[in-house]
Image 1 (spheres, rainbow, N blue to C red):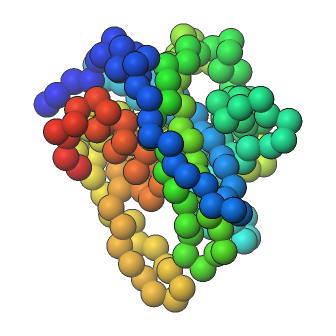
Image 2: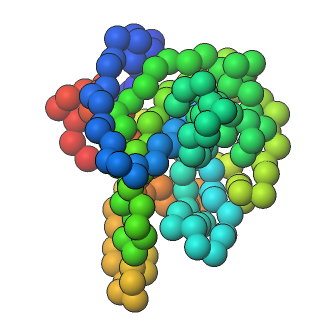
Length: 200
């Protein structure tokens, strides 16, 4: 088993410049925070379980905290930090260290006329047990082992209904939930940044 190292992640992210994703005329921008904490034997990542909401293509799914870029935001990174505080009450300025960005992902949910680019930013908690205050958008917060995901120890499949057809999607088991889709893709971008030879 390959063990991830915080000092390696920190060093590589500090020098990493992700490629620019070109927006279309009606592209929306969003940002999320990939929040890490170091445990004795592994590194964990924070995931939120989104509350059930009619009309939300990501309703009830696992995700990193974050949301849409607002006109009041100074930057995409600021949007990720603001949304994290709004969703789970975590002040990243007070309780975490910013490590850097990872590769953006493009979201085109089926059945929706939506084009969105999501920019992930990575943080390391300086307080492993910060106070949290979940708002109405978040049903729960779960921690998953980043090492297990990197090493393929918790691979799972999720059955999801798409336009009346049931399909299976790969993901990672975290508690009783499965991390899949865009968030899984962001994790893979992080793993490939750490090791270009990494394979899912």
